Amino acid sequence: MNSEHEDEQIKKLLKRWTDVDESIQQHTWEKIDDQLFPTVRKNKYRKRNLFVAITTGAAICIIMLGLFTHQGQAVVEEIKDLFVSEKQEIIEIEGNKEEADVKLQANESLDFVIYIDEDGYKMEYDDDIARIITKEPLGEMYPDVYMEIFQVIGQSKNEVINTIKDQLEDEKMIIFREEEVSDPLEGTIISGIEEDEATGDFRAGWDSMINQYLLVEVSDQQYFVIKQVYFQEAAEGHGARFDHMLQSFEIIH
Image (cartoon, rainbow, N blue to C red; front, side, top):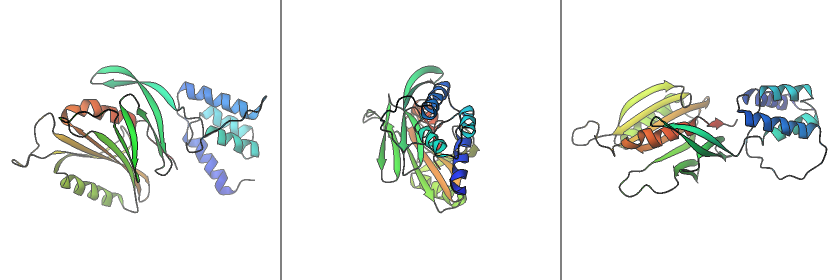
């Protein structure tokens, strides 16, 4: 028998992952059918560091077939492998639609998964920070372009916001946006643009830097901070691509 805590975790698991595309739904049903009604036992090597994507119908099926039995638990383990590792998406950039191959990236220590556009970007890890950078260098004439994802634990929301504002000040940025948003993620956005030290106003120019922070609450005193860095002319290019990638960002509890 599962403990009360284990049962509750499984219920949360089933409740969470209900909005996936048709290819994942089909994959889910095939996996469940293979697990519950096996005809041939196959040895498979599986990664256990990804969380799951399931459909409402799959959840109901699992519950009906004995969620809290050993077989049901085995199916839940199978479901943890159902996030497709690669897929193709349509991205709208500067008013034009284009196809992009995206690849799942997961970080067990940081507790999140995200699909990144593997044609133009790659992910690197530095201690407790995940950084998405351009696959190829942009060239010496261009400023930095990247997106960082990290956690802040043990601080209130106001404390994190104040830290972000202090960071923007240290980066010589003028804050021009601070608001609650639901897109690309639900959270608080704080954006800064490079300051012209001579005038104290925004620095005009195609290469004027923009540093944008998105604060996403996980639980009380636990937050993800997502920092986007790009320049003015890249706002509708790299900035839009970063936002599109963030729409696939999922927190693993």
